[in-house]
Length: 243
Image (cartoon, rainbow, N blue to C red):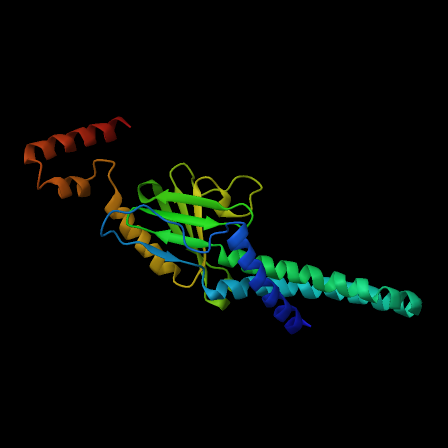
């Protein structure tokens, strides 16, 4: 039955996706991110392994629900065969219709998720009915981590979690998804998570403009005199000592 559900779902999805992009203005292209001339911009989606990962969760839940419906129908049929015959069509509908709806939702979630990286910021878009776009500038990033569970490892995918200033890496109470937090972004289900983390970290270092660290002072020493650099270092040390 799973093959039939998948074939019917693909046929319905093709028409549904066309209607949503045409009439409901669901974007089918990555979001635009302002960039300077010559600035590199990379857009990408979750890996196909993420779609398979979601489908596995879907099929596990499907087997549990459909199994319960089947057992209930068999019990009724054994007790009262006439009622079993009457309830056959409703039971099939309850078993198949929700499966198609959830299957379509999984593909819509995958096709409407985009990540865009420029030299200065990251933009995340996700959502079907309500589209959420989050832009994170690299100057505000505090921490970037790669997270991978056992099942994600099996599908060759991982998540890149990005904590920004004020986030502290903690989720609000009762919140299940890190990307829903106001100070946290999530690049979900990518196959090259470590490359993306390295890319963000390198651009984070290039975009830092605040503070008076030695790296920043040295980078400006070509335009500042040695006396100016020494004065700034003294100010930095005084601030550090007072705190």
